[in-house]
Image 1: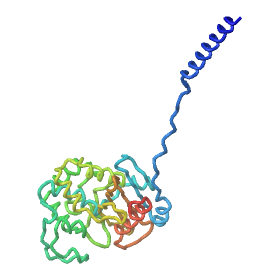
Image 2: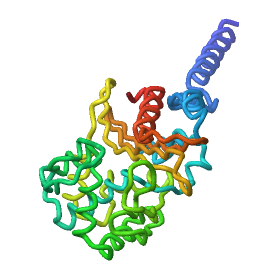
Image 3: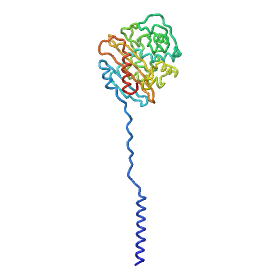
Image 4: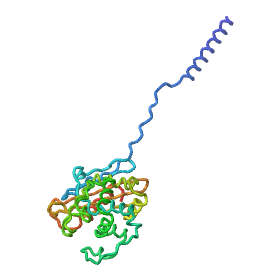
Length: 300
């Protein structure tokens, strides 16, 4: 009887030990699914502000994120696809041409004023490449195109794929419009849309234009405007003109590059009046609208 009890006890201990060991070594086969990462932060939209700012205008605003290689805001895409005269935003590709060809050497390259009085007083003096861009001096641009010649300008426009790259409207007027400030009976044959302005600016700021690196660097340098209150570097160019055929409605442009805090953007604002307006403030107003949009996006 004692022997039987010992046998039973040993059998129980062995069984219990095996059961415990098997339970301890058993693996959890439940499939682990990690939680989804949080969505990337979304930039605020300037839609409401743009709707108000463009209330009496046919306006377009584009904001392109260079890091994401995509648009983060497109306001009124049909207007953004409409080609118009580039007006003084044409000075940006013209600067690349001038530096690349050697007509301009650096930001201090100076042209002498010929003494002819202009309605814009800031133009009535000698100009450097830097002041040309800052004061938007038309006669300085015309001096460059005359030195380049039509064939060379046309070749650059073709290589840059700038808008419709049509320079047939005249060596000194192809990018200008009619209006209160006469420009020798201009015929603006060069036409460009908001989206095409973004494409050109992207190539300029990523050094993808068929021009020397120095030419692109110097162009970027003379288009610098300011450091924004939020710490971003803002560069750009305004453009002012009037819409054909009667040239009684303003045309405004501002093309810009914004960079800082590991972010980089191209922005474009353009508009035309719905009714007659003979003010020369098209470019200035386009710049104001773009800056307000940048504020809505936390960039200014």
